[in-house]
Length: 308
Ligand SMILES: Nc1ncnc2c1ncn2[C@@H]1O[C@H](COP(=O)(O)OP(=O)(O)O)[C@@H](O)[C@H]1O
Ligand SMILES: [Mg+2]
View 1 (cartoon, rainbow, N blue to C red):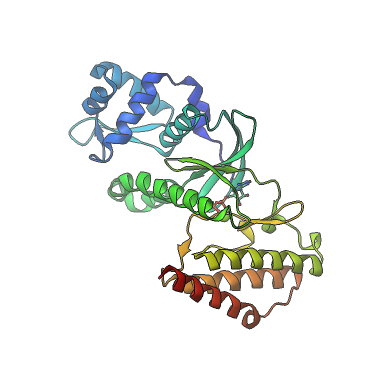
View 2: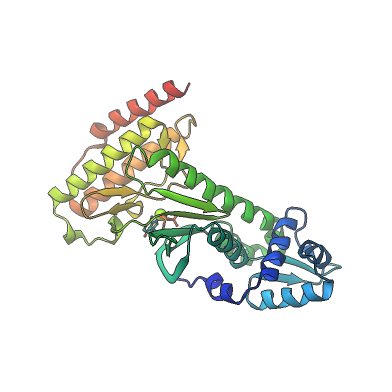
């Protein structure tokens, strides 16, 4: 499902005051499920009537949500409001100058758009939708109470995930083929735009068995360096490998584990199994797990030793 970035449509219509109001809702969500109108007004340094009027507009744009059956009038930020705040921060810091409304990637947990930096570099802007998408879908099943409880945490969790992916790219981009990180803010990661095709998008006939074998070797080679370094991807699949003109890149590092975490052992095993199965199923590349695994197992143990 390709979704428009609703925040981009709202963005040009917003004034400084609107951003202050959104920020007021965001900050106070640490203390309230539904932030009292008065608290927003105080933060934005306007009277209650003005705040209420602007919040009404923001509600119409789906950037906030209003509730009045709780004994007072309260507001929550929506994922679109959170998008707006992240875009604003990235624009102010001179990270991105523009974001295209056309979505390039739809993953399991994120929407990815093309952006341009002030110096004209093309970047990928990844909006985490964990919590946002998943929690609102779940809220439909579990009703408002569930949604309320989850509300502060999706802001928090999706932010943690963005930071985690950014950190992984900082660690890995000097040593392996992953996108170069540019910046992060809130639930958004900005990184080098990778020109290429996801393995999952390729038709089986796009690669010969021999070509596919070479691609697999490159992926394993890069992944081995990464495991030696002490990191396990944990969501390795043909959806997270991009084939460029002359090489490969491994993307989507949000759920990595360090090898210090004992769970990373099973994750690594699964990553390798998934990879080998995909190449066998689609391109008849025969690589036996028992032959590939020992090298990775050694690398995993070694890196644990190094890190103590
Ligand atoms: N740096 C990038 N350059 C170009 N396209 C990207 C980049 N990062 C992600 N994408 C595209 O967006 C999709 C989703 O991104 P991904 O990081 O895999 O998130 P998810 O966790 O949602 O799977 C990818 O499958 C890919 O098509
Ligand atoms: Mg992915």
